[in-house]
Image 1 (cartoon, rainbow, N blue to C red):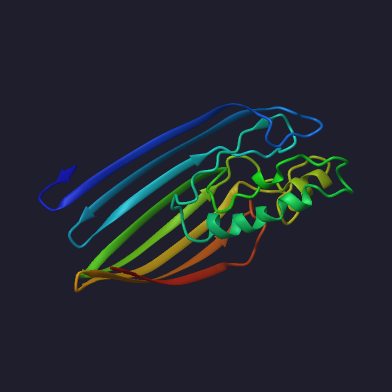
Image 2 (image 1 turned 30 degrees about the horizontal axis):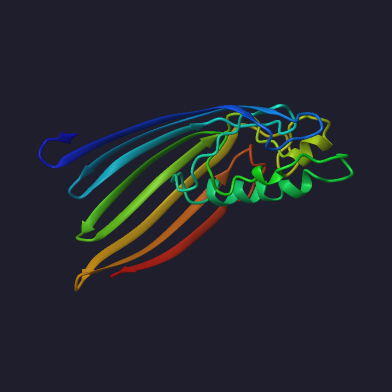
Amino acid sequence: MTIGSNWKLQLESEVAMILGETDLGASPDAEQHQVMQLAGAFRADLNGPLGGVGFTALFASGDNNLGDDKQTGFKADSNFDMGMLLFPYVIAAQTARAPVTAANPDLVGVPAQDRERIPTRGSVTNTWAFFPKAWVRPLDGLELYAGALMALSNVDNADPFNTRLAGGDPRNAVNEDPGSYYGTEFDLGLRYSALLWGTTLQLGVEGAVLLPGSALGLTDMIMGGRAMAVYQF
């Protein structure tokens, strides 16, 4: 949609639902699981000649009880961009140990199968997330962009090992009572693109700061950054 002579508004939305049955993750208590997963996304971008603003909102259902007969945790495609640290690295790292700890012989006699489904591997899941952002293009080919990601958990961010150790009361990866607030992440990046004799050069740097919330059980600020270079010919 064109607004005036120089501005373009783009709106996108998507809803996905997964229903069915599966024997993935079978355990002595539940050989079959009912699959009930839901997600929805909305994106709006307003783009002009020298910059623009955008907003992305996402809901993805979660699963805080991996031992029952239901699978309710929706995992979005890992390429769905919702920040730089929280989902791709922090939550991915916290859930990565679950396939091993969930099979601890001191807690379970026969562990559930297919425990490799537990790690998020960077996918967005179990959240209400909101990501406003803005960008400016001060020079031809140069773009400066920034965004602030705010995320809440849909259900308790429960670690299977610590939760079982606590007798079923939800506990997160650091063995604390999980709140609903994942945290707020601030992203900043600079990108440059140029045409060179029929080829394309792209250079960029990005940085992020995460202020973790009670759902993660972390207190220290988390920072990260990366640089990239792409040459296409």
